[in-house]
Amino acid sequence: MFEVRNNIHILIVVYIISCLSIWYAKLPIMFNDDEAKPFGIGKNKTVFSYQIVVILLAIIMFYIFEICMAKKNNFL
Image (cartoon, rainbow, N blue to C red; front, side, top):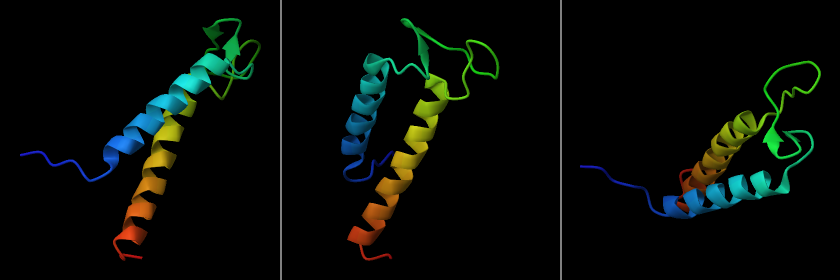
């Protein structure tokens, strides 16, 4: 019914660890004190909001995973 590719669980664990490390690091570009800055341009806003960074991180990590799996299976 539903098949999960080999080693995708490793990618999921690495993604969760990456998201948590960004959250606990509380980078000043994304956070004001303990609160995430809203998305936008202006005072106390940021283009690099936590939600945007996490989505881009997921896309980039997935494509890197796919390229590595394709190389491993001799598709590239």
